[in-house]
Every structure is written in structure tokens, then in C-alpha cells.
Image 1 (cartoon, protein in one colour):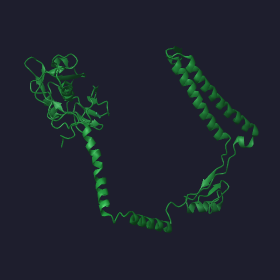
Image 2 (cartoon, helix red, strand yellow):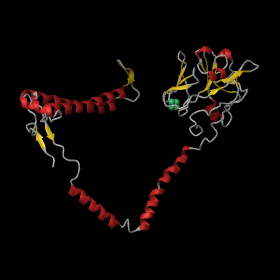
Image 3 (cartoon, protein in one colour):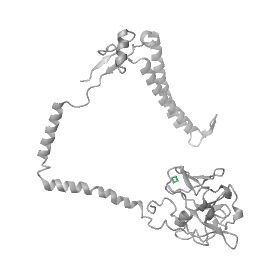
Image 4 (cartoon, rainbow, N blue to C red):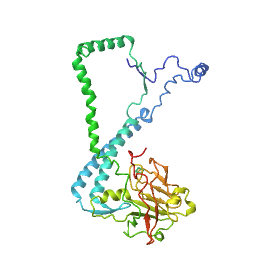
Length: 352
Ligand code: FES
């Protein structure tokens, strides 16, 4: 049974503060129950004038709430939807929205403030303790439950009626399959579709903004340029799919800044091209920090170092961004020397 006691109830064997006996007990048991501190009376408990003042404050707050609610209804009726007013420091705002927000805010705040003030100053604040009782059941109760369980199992016939039991277990085993089947609605597996993109040997890099072939002199140190393969037309059926897989970002680094040998060899005079599709879950990457050569995926902040093979520096992405090998053709335009060698994007299933 729960025992409730007031601050006057002193638990047995408590050290008495200030006494030698108390110090001795505290030394022996540093975690001894310190008991309740002496009750401190509030001003309202001992001064009737202060109590009446608090009562007036609480009443005033509740009356304020009532007035604000009436104001809310009045504003709703008075202000037309399209009336704009200037209110410092907010500027031009809708009179209706502003007045409704203000009056409702005041109405709710005043109720809350009134309730808090009432509780803190006028309601009883006597400290009480509730001794924690044992959480475990006693032996007799446990035995009773065990017997009830055995009796219930016998009466249900779970052990005796094997056909029902087995069919029930079968049903319970199969029913989760319904959830597994629903996974099919996530869409078709990409199979090998992520292995290949529209990039191929000799395909020019087309500037995604100007739709013109990119030339090395168009790519300046510190800039980030987006490109797509030559020949992709918006009118073709699979344009969105192809552009999503082949999107490329191109930067020019000072050759001495490139730490990864393969990256340097696969670029052209410091110009390097990487897949723009984040290897976490496939967001397009777009934020380039030119001093550090880091690119940041805006979705979950994966950060890649473009001066070091697009290695993952931070975030949930598990793989570097695939690099496209590039060169320059006879026209002086940047071209791909083949497709990506790794699947672009998350490509969970293709990677070992
Ligand atoms: S998709 Fe890029 S970090 Fe998640």
C-alpha cells in the first residue's frame, strides 16, 4: 500500500543534520535519505494582503484572456481578408492574420500565466513523500499466476488440439509475408540499369546551362560547371532517367592540388569530372567550396573531397563519387573517354 507522508514525517534512522550523530551516520552511509528540507512558507501563506493581491492578479489574467477572446471574434468580423496594414517592426502585414494571431496568443498566454501564478502562490505547496514500494510480486502471487497460466493453457486446449494449434502457428508465420509482398510497390529493381549511363567514348561534354560543348578554357579554377552527354534530347522518352544518371560536375584544380594519381590521370590539365549524384541516396550535389575543393550534398551533408578522388570526408555516403575519364577531341572540346567505371548514385545492390 502506498504511504503518503507530509514534510513533518521524518523517516526512521535518518541522520540528524548538524549533530555529531548525523555526521557519523552520513559518513557510514553517504547515500542515506536526507529527508525533506524544512518547509518554507510563502508570503501569501502568512500575509493575507499578499494572498489577496495574488488572487487579484490571477483573476485579472483570466479576465484578460476573456477580453482577448472577445477581441479575436471582433477582429474576425471586422477585418476583411485582403486588408494590409503597416505595423512596426513587422512591415506590411495582413490586418486579419495579425490581429487574430495577437488576440489568440494573448488569450492563451493569459490562461496559462493565470494558472501558473495561481498554483505557485495560492494553491497548497506542502511537500509530501510517497515511499516507493517493492516492484516484484511476492512468492504467493507468482505461484498463483503460474497456476492460472497452466490452467488457462489446459482449458484453451492449445496442447490437446494439435490441428488448431498448428494451423494457427502456420497462419501467424505466413501473415508477415503480406508486408513483404507490399515491398514490391517500392518500384522495380534497377538491376543493371545503374551500371551504364549515356556516357561513351568520344561523347562531348555539353554545358548544361548553355547547351554548348565545353572547352577546357571555359572551365576556370574555382568554378563548378555542370555537364551532360552530347546527344541527349529533352524530347526522348527516357530523357529524365538518362540525365539523372549522367549528370556531371566539372572543376578545374591546380594540377599540384590533386592528391590522387588516378584522378590526375583521368582528368585533362587539372580539369576533372565527377558524377553529380550523391552516393548516399542520390541527391544532386551542388555546393562547392573552392578553397578546400570540397563538395557538399544538401540532403544529408555528405562531403566529398574533389582533390582526392572525391573521397567521402563526412556524412552518410558510403562511396566516393565516380569519376569520368575525359580528354579533348580534335575540335578542342572536352570529351568522355568511356562510361563511368563504377555505378553512379547509391547503387546498393551492385556494389560488393
Ligand atoms: S543523398 Fe547526399 S547525403 Fe544523403
